[in-house]
Length: 348
Image (cartoon, rainbow, N blue to C red; front, side, top):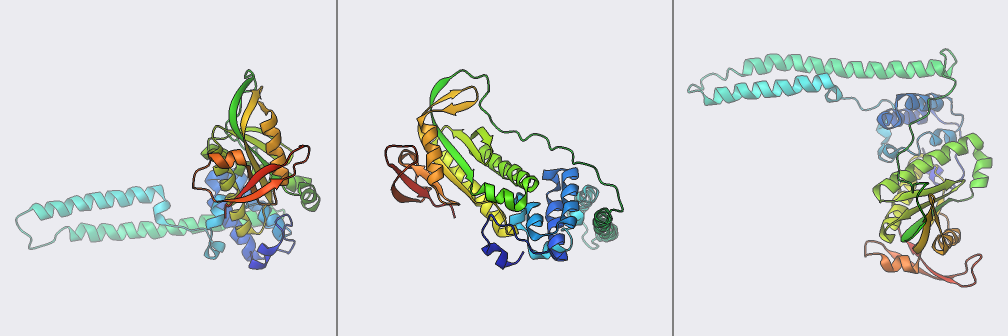
């Protein structure tokens, strides 16, 4: 994607027609993420990449992939291939090294060093190993080319396509048990909101918005997992999670904003989000978190600018020096009869 696309508002997916290089680059990213997506989902997305009429729709296929941020322009024609990626070649190479290392050791321990006789098995066997490596790389390239040709035929309607992809297995993430008895606990809560989601839905359509939301939620759940967060609700374009420590909630918010920005930089599109964090006493009942602490977190989220993380003073007081905070002063909050002191968290 060109640098000019990165200047577009994040909720406006690019509408230009993608080039062959753009499609090839996306296909490579999807192939590299095959172990994460699963074969069927990766192939479905590659097929969609060949059909995508705009760069925006092409970007939607890969913006949730962590490898996208590390891809380089050289990857646009073929995925990286290497003989060492082949299990059979790794076994062959390992046995070659161990056996010949043992022969060299035997030679070193003998009395006569007039002739370096391990040279003969090393050289002869080495030729065979090199031939194995060349053949393995050729097979890898051939398999890739055949797969791309098959996808191209599928895009032209020459091959049948499944009527729908198989559903992905449910993402495993923590949730408050639905049957849990009500209790009061000190928690930190984080609200995440997609900015201008109504307009985004109108621009890209309901089906593509559903894809964006699903992938957005997948990234968010990854952050929950790494920061000891528990998902409470994921309704509409707003998402709520609870944490035992305010620092964990802020770490989650920073990590998520960075993930979204990485995808935006790479593919030219990702939804803008705003995040609000508050901490205090809350009631946990039947899988939900209730109370003034939660309500205030929601209001703080609404007061945040696009791509901003706002926290309350009580959260800021509990943080350590790892976070850079900027005092935003007192803010009027909708529905509250008092102003609230908030601070923004630097995450770039």
